[in-house]
Amino acid sequence: MKTILVVEDAAMNRDLLVQLPEDRYRLVLAEDGIEALERAVETRPDLVLMDLSLPRMDGWEATRRLKADERLARIPVVVLSAHAMRGDEERARAAGCDDFLTKPIDETLLFDKLAQFLGD
Image 1 (cartoon, helix red, strand yellow):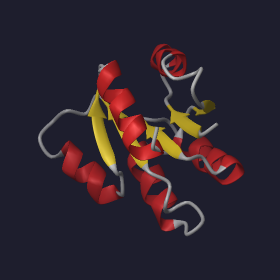
Image 2 (tube, rainbow, N blue to C red):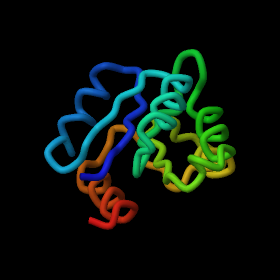
Image 3 (cartoon, rainbow, N blue to C red):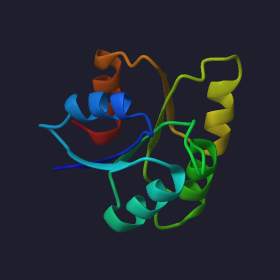
Image 4 (cartoon, rainbow, N blue to C red):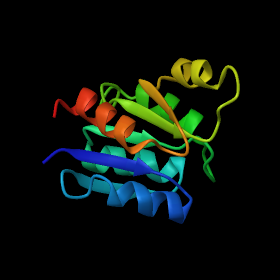
């Protein structure tokens, strides 16, 4: 079973994300960027779903650090963000994310991305 690290500080969003793929994937949760990096090192997930607006360390910086770590750099990062302003996707990609989805999350599109990156 493939592992997905879900990085989301809002409980409602986190609960929704956990319910969608829970029967197909092992899910690991983190509520901020620091915890995300710790969980990534511990579990070596197959994919990271990363919110950008996080406490302690935001998703932009967490993604940069994850991609700068040679042990973690190959893990795909898909940003899930309410940041839908012009330039946000480009900024996220510059930080190292591999794909970008806006909130509210389109369930079909999310599953398409999971299949794309996890080969399901």
